[in-house]
Image (cartoon, rainbow, N blue to C red; front, side, top):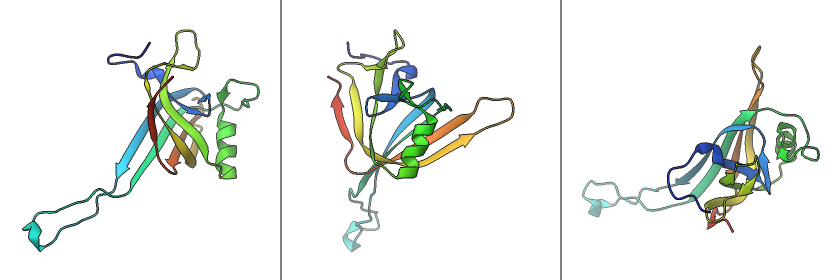
Length: 150
C-alpha cells in the first residue's frame, strides 16, 4: 500500500540493481539545474536566467561491512569499492521499502527515482573504539527517471 503521509526515514534507501546498500544510516538525493545568465540591455538591470543543464546525485552513509553480496543480501562496502575501482556505471534506485519483516521489498505505489550513475567518491573512516563507517556518493549519468513502484 502506498505511503500516504509523512513517513519514517528508515524506509527510504539506496539500491544498486535490486540490492540495498548495507547498513545505511542516512541517504539523500540531489537534483541540480544550471541557470545560465540570459540578461540583456532589455532586462533593465534585472538578471534573466534560463533553465540549463540538469544533473543529479545520490549519497548514502552507514556502517562499513566486508561480507560480499554473494553471501549477504545487501551491497557491502567491499563491493562499493570494487564498483568505484572498476569505474562501472550502475543502476541506482532511491525509494521506500517495506521494513516490517526486515525485507527489502519496494513499497508498491510509492515514487522511486532511478538512473545510471558512477561512484563519484567512497570514503571509509575508522575512528578508535567506534564502528567503521562509509560515505558513498553517486553521480548520475543521463536522465533520472521518476516513476511509481509497481
